[in-house]
Image (cartoon, rainbow, N blue to C red; front, top):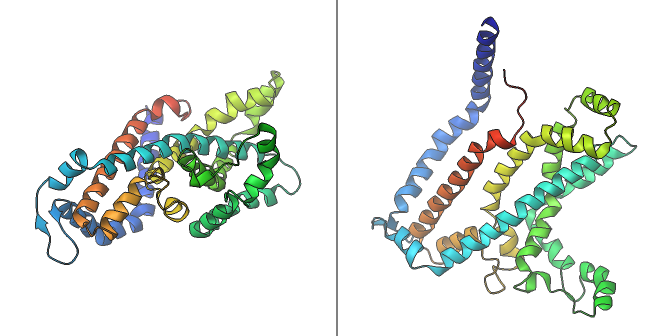
Length: 305
């Protein structure tokens, strides 16, 4: 009983410390963020071109988006495709890199730095670089794959210029920044007690079994964290499509955030753009809440007292 009481007190102190550390951000959100958030909610129920005063029209913006706007569903479908494919691939690549870079060999810190470097490069510069790499006629990737094209007697892939491969091209490009999640995986991996591996070795476990039964289960908290963050980021994908494909070809990479940007900046329809923003918030919130409900089934949090 005394042990449970002390654990409860410890958790209360930990929660209090968490709120104190988060208080600068929370204060900034309340003081500087609440007004724009509430203003956008009101504007979503208006027609507003940023010149004349907003005119209240009720749920008309939402009705148009759901029932009379094919581009809304097209952009949402493109975004869902990106999220469903890119997130699992990103997790697999990030975990794989962490497993490779967890070895204690000479110069490993240099390799870790090299894999993380793409995350400090401007996304605009990165997009321009990949435009050159994916260029069908003289890009390095197609030049590297030329022997395979000749062997299979096929034309070089057009990558981001072809409707059939444009979305996957952007997903492949996004894997270049997997070093960001790799650092989080690596940190938790190095926090796993070595005694667990030593015990497994005494029982005859090889590297694969230790990875499956020890490393991966104990990494599920960081995997789940990156999964949630990837969902939030995946629904906001915009810059790479804006620079590399301009939403094409045939709007195959016309993502939700891109359409919302066009509604705001091209059509000058702030009411419609705000409505789209709130729809996106609800979608991400629902998916996140479902994921959090499944948290206890997929994340190892240690033995419960």
